[in-house]
Length: 266
Image (cartoon, rainbow, N blue to C red):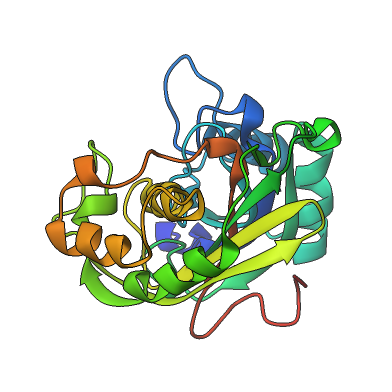
């Protein structure tokens, strides 16, 4: 009797992971020949753990120097490993500035990027004349005094569905600059501020450009209403400078349903 070749076929499952990293020594998430990237480190670790060569797909590209607490990735996997074992084994092979927080088996159609329904970015900034030595590379440093009330008055201009072309960097691959920001907050923290932005999706460097624009208001160089004018003008040259990469964190990615429910805590 001839054996059916399909009998030995094992359909790959889809493994999803939440990873965190210090972006200071990475040239962003996406693989680039000759440069150290998060994607390549994860793929190398997975090969060491499973013996499989798979492409790791991320929920988005973080730029060089940008950090993550809640970057989501997925990959197809043939080897059957429990979620707990995946976390332990991956972290045994990953470098000190990259770690898997949790893992889950996701539905077959799950895609880290395409299945995302929202993202939460946080921009941390130390303020004042004292250099943030112990947070070096982890926060931006703003020496000048800031008017918190004025910046908060400007935030409504950045909430809602708008054309955010004025806050989009060159080199983007998207076909539209219309995005929906569902919430924006500026919260005091010990020694500085945290800018929170949550939305359905973001343009390349959009968060850093929005922060840079809000800082112009905080410095007193512009009034809060100026941010609305910048947004409606759709001219990147009129907006503020791009804020430093070291302050930005991809904090969380949202899914419905969420394969990580009950696994990772903020």
